[in-house]
Image (cartoon, rainbow, N blue to C red; front, side):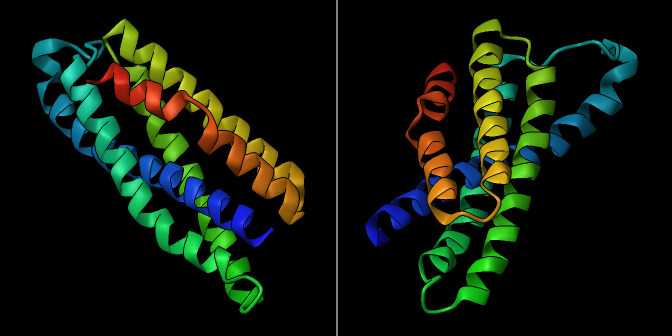
Length: 162
């Protein structure tokens, strides 16, 4: 059970890092657009490079935020209070990732990248719903995180950006 929990936590960490990277990249992406909007118009979509750069940055940032939280979750038997706090923070990291990824998807101009990122966003939202439905049941939480991390959506999104 401990090995499975560690794997799930590691997977969750990677996913969260992806969320964080997109979140950070999304704001800078929007700022240049705001200043360029009189020239290009508000409906101008981002090109593939801009979209992918934002997604990859979000992914990296999310992974960096999630990794220490996953380590705390793995030590849940020794520090239950720390694991509970880490779980709450992890849920926030996932929520931020989903919000920022949604903005990237909405601004994506390349159809293939938009499709891959949309699938990633749907997988993240499903993982969030599954974790919420688990109501604190560690086995169900692990199953939800493992299903997300073992799924193909992150790899497919990265492949669409290569």
